[in-house]
Length: 219
Image (cartoon, rainbow, N blue to C red; front, side, top):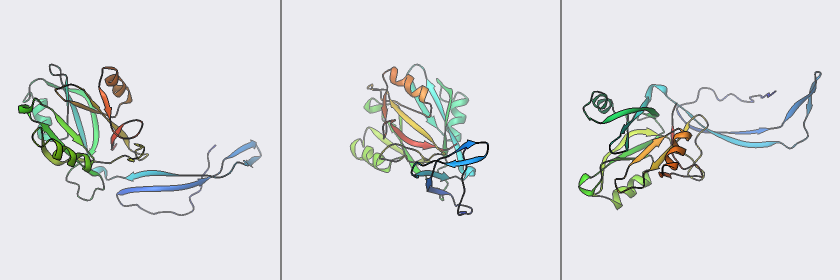
């Protein structure tokens, strides 16, 4: 049985990212009479978590174009409506989606996600997303004619720990897979099963840490 005590209330926390540091000692029931302290040393650690504003949450919907074997992700209501009503023939929903923060939430501590479009004149016809300001700037600097910036803030999301790829405990890792073909395409998913299926099909994981995480999705 786990027991814990909060020594000090933090009150109502404002929207933002926080780290909770804790110190704990293992205790166990010796018998029906009560606790017997465990003699192991105290354990210390920390949890990273985000206080969210659910009003600003949205879903980025995934679509698939079978002939091209391309995936596309969007949270834009006008694009979603046009895709769903046949305005862009060939695209169908996959049933997958990723929780994001709306781009208009100026109070959010989430990072802006940039979106690029691959220039068809350069043999491309796809979109690329990144929550990393450094990566967005690098794409602009290295591929100014090939990858065209459509938006510097298409939606917002949270970055993982850049040393190990860990997300805050209440958010979900997002994985990015690259098709490793001349017709560059990326797929974004929160599903470990889909990630493994794409890797088995030859797609390459991109991201930070051992699990290759690119950003952290909200619920």
